[in-house]
Image 1 (cartoon, helix red, strand yellow):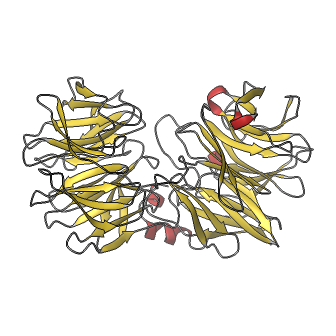
Image 2 (cartoon, one colour; image 1 turned 180 degrees about the vertical axis):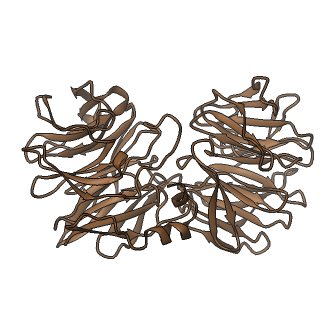
Image 3 (cartoon, one colour; image 1 turned 30 degrees about the vertical axis):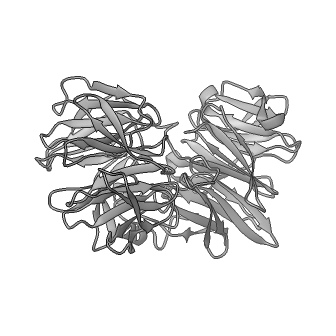
Length: 539
């Protein structure tokens, strides 16, 4: 399994001709695979090797720039890296954002945990003397000095800076970095715990880095811009116009700039003299989770919750169309991880932000963005227009109505890992309980009837026009069909590339495998291992 994460080329070779289909079904890849699972922090070692981190994929990659491929350098879960930094002695350190851990390794030596218990640990940088500093962002807002031996606890220096994100020490031994929530670039004297604003007027600055001449470069994730800043005067000059959803940058000893883009699942090389950008790696999808299908005139459109973007896929051609991407200025989107679609309603949900978003499938406009859910893993629009949410955090199905979803009632509780959710023929709904290994029907009065038991991590759920349920049994890496009236289970396809090993603790820090059924009975499912979409067609 670990080789499937190694690089796009290896993945493509391994699954170019899938043979893992049951006798009556043919399984083919509709959207091709890609190297990362969302790409974030970048770092360059003393030999000029480029490294990239992924939070959702919980892995740290080494990038072959010339070959345009990537291989896993440190696998999940320890490899989770939101940022990467190299010490003067060559030691590589990285931050496990969701796990709250900070790790380091010198050369091929053992991995050492330097700090733990810091959820949201995000950015880090070494001083010239080898001391290490790190911040928490999004799940915290604190600057620490980290003991490079991992013996002493982190020493807090400052807090409430405004989201001090991807930073670096400058030639003056001051820490320069963006204040994500303030649109500013700041300079911090870590010895005096003093912060000074260097430049202002950014939309959402995400990271900074210095070149060999002392120029300070900034990526603005909302505007998709690479900007040069004079650290003394604060004067700004745009170097390159890229796409929004930029995350980090790294500059090598020849002053070549490498920029990561979360939504593109890719890395670009930018020439600071001309602003010309060359794509090194890019993906059609970033990290597909839940999916839904709408059909018109016999043509299926797959709606994909792609974590860093909302995209649609043509069920016949595999063409991918981007509808919205994370952090782009003026765009409403919050890390979509699950998607359902019915009629003109597309519903995206995100356990990370606790949100449910209702989109007009025709115009792409957001009709409502509902907040305050506790780990929502799926949501559907019911016949009366209300919304039913599978809320993993409360083990419940929550019915939502009223203006902006202000009226919320629990339909049923005590569910063991509610993940997938689909409407039935009438008022009933069906749900997967991943932890219990069951698929159940829930009637409008909240009464539950278990249809299938002893499944291995059932997640994605869809219902065909014949009433049969299609389930992604992730723990068994297969698709199954369930007859609701009898509970009969039939395998559709096995040995599938689903079930990415991610962050420690499993759910809820997990991207669900999505399943959907088109108008003609074609089954679509997402592959989190490959960042691909597959289709299963009855022979």
